[in-house]
Length: 560
Image (tube, rainbow, N blue to C red; front, side, top):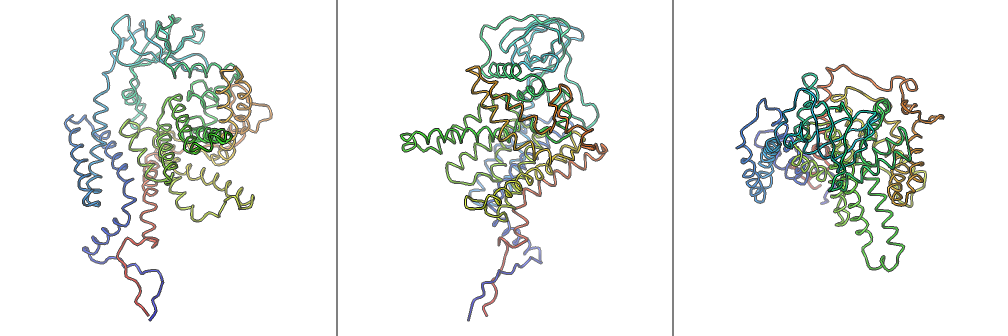
């Protein structure tokens, strides 16, 4: 008698009782992959709050903690039942978090209808193509009491004042509250201002009076202003504005024509600091620190060089996140970078859906309103697609280790670059259609040129420029940084001010973007949501259906 080693035969359920048992076995076999769905439930609770027509009662906040504790208690005894209750508990927690964050915001400002004298402390200065924009904290209107919300003011283009963070400013200005949505379903500026602490914005109608602050500028605000001034002086024009955006996160100085050209070519994400930028910064810092430590034999023999370099690179990434304003994509990237560093130190997998879900949950709890923004949706959708794609492609890619021929390694690298652009583009395109109403047709080609240049030249040169600023030698690194950013333009005459990257303009690449009918945005957004859910269960439903795992009831073949 011999025992056959063939694959077991799957027996699909036929009766309701058997179906319930089959579903239980399926969930039991996929128990390790159920945790990311808790983050989905948390986001669903946040969305449920913002979908309400009126503000709910504040008592609902206290319903979430008992549910979470009950789910944890039940999960320790019956994991599947605890997970099912955990979905309800996390949805309630998201609803409660959104309710609490809304209630804790300061009240709106009662702004005057006409011009007034506005005074306050400068917290940040944004460079504009034709002036400066100030953010004032604790502003006073016509000498009144300090307000609880900040105000943004745009100075006149011919104003000679050069206020810095920490200075006191007094100016006659016209201030208006945040505008309502342009049409039903459009972006809600009032909601965004409510959660950001913005009370109003306006423009100066007189020259500003600047008084140097006694306490000085905040550390990061002063450093950000110094970097912007030094970069703009060494690299004038649009290239300098792009360099400022990559180093400090401020895009206000980039001319509108250049922003439109980058957006139409599918390169707008290069200007918004996110995972790509912090990965480059941390990767360069990790490699450089590890090399320097290895060059000192006494330290290399006594210290865990890899761990020290990883933790130092994480610290550099945290400073870069704070310097660039801690936007949602940077928070997501830094959270996942932290988990990846811990995984590296403990020998665990650095890329996983659990890290993605944990990063999403942390941001949803800290900023529930972020789930409604394009940055949150596109950032997490792109990373979700990349993780799902990597899990599917990893066993199918040819070996590219150090013993592989250079042609194979080059081919794998090029395939990875194209696959990354395709996956991220496919995941973010529906969200872009919904929020911006545009479809970029040359995004893959543009990113295939721009991303390697940004990784190997632009960002490393920017880091070198910041390191050389104390010596006054930042120009040595900013010049190649500007040159590297101009190269994707393939322009022989450079980058003329106000004309943008010429090769991506519509007259050079006809039909670079499409603007579908606005009625397609809702269906595109729904398709994006379905795609994200499909990616989340990529390694759940399909492996079960294909028989790679055996979570359902099965019987081995009868012995021959």
